[in-house]
Length: 340
Length: 227
Image 1 (spheres, rainbow over the protein chains, first blue to last red):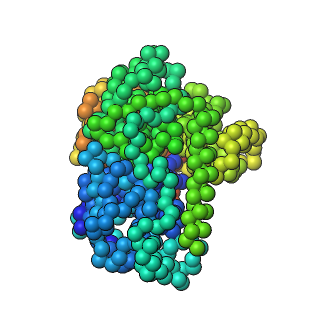
Image 2: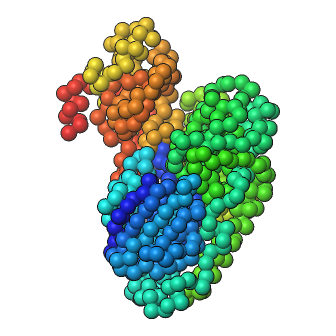
Image 3: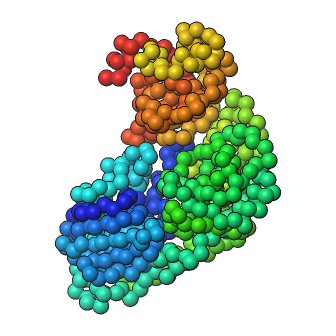
């Protein structure tokens, strides 16, 4: 069965956790810019973590469902409704046949990720269902969604990973019969995972490979100044405006691997924070890297926002990442138990 | 050889400090092979480029980051000389039509080099190149080995749209635009091949380390090959 896109919003695309294994052919990671949010939403509706969902950026998205499904979303302070009923982030809800689901972005912008039980059934391209918007492949016809698009969903609307394919459809029907389930599932994701809306945007960074190429004033102002997000930011990177980060000398560097989170500085001294659609290699010096656990916040940055950076140690960054992965494994196991 | 953190879930191995086309690439490819053979748990993929290898890690599959680093060091220290298959042997031949319709910046390259256009074509199509890395766009290969006199600075303002197959010179490197994209290199011809195809594995025609030669073709052959 499928969903009809009544309104595609500003930039909505099909994304899973990204395309790996082809970076050496120049193929970007793509994928949900906040992979963690999509994983959490997927686990809630009983999908594999890597199932394809929708990434919504700005605007209003309206989707009509052709059959019964479970949905969950995580991300910025969006307003998400089924009919008139509000759906809290990080909670599962049942969407019936012919219901309309609406996602409205806050005026300040931001992104949200929607998981639908079964997952969006677009063909695997180079091992992933993610849309590569620059490469124009993957996802739904290699492009952002448009009004009127119809997306296939996997036939199996399974509710838990444990269920076999044969009874997968029953779970959703079960849920429909249980009124308590419909209003609010008894379990949800931790609040900080569900709604990504920090009061003050401070991203933690670790020193980059080329940290020493920068003047000490640049190193200092990276940690002490506010940077503004400029309008030419996109899924490739957040372009920032702030004090010019000057190098001690301006020799050319050879291109080498870059990654989402890399903070690179072109000759104009204005840093670019790379995101999921970034090129696989880059020749600009890497002054720092935003730590992985803070990438969900980075994925919420919209033009006009202000961001600050705070230095962390590599050990600290990796410990935080470990901790989150452990918590996520517990969460996944917990959801599995509830849903059994 | 130095291993540096590339953020908290990737590493960069600096295999050699200075780039010398043949030596650096051989060393980088050899190290890449060693890492592949070691099948280190938690390593997702490797990205060789010029003098380095990017190593991407999956934090969910890693118990201790220090352990991965140790495993990488161990894999790189192993002396596998003689036991590894040879890195690359074949030369990929790329037919190129250098006729004026396709050679939008040939005049500029000739002027910059102080050579006749025919001579530019002759020198470009007789040199043997090597892929230093693939990136920028899917399948775009940076080729080293351009005769130094053909080196031409990138255009002051990049074109909004360069056609797929455009053969171009950017600084001391040459390359082919795999797909229609913006680009600032000087276009001197067009190649009738598919340089990137998601139906292939690997999807890119070129991989780091491959050797490449351009063969001059006439418009007629270009049209035939395009069919």
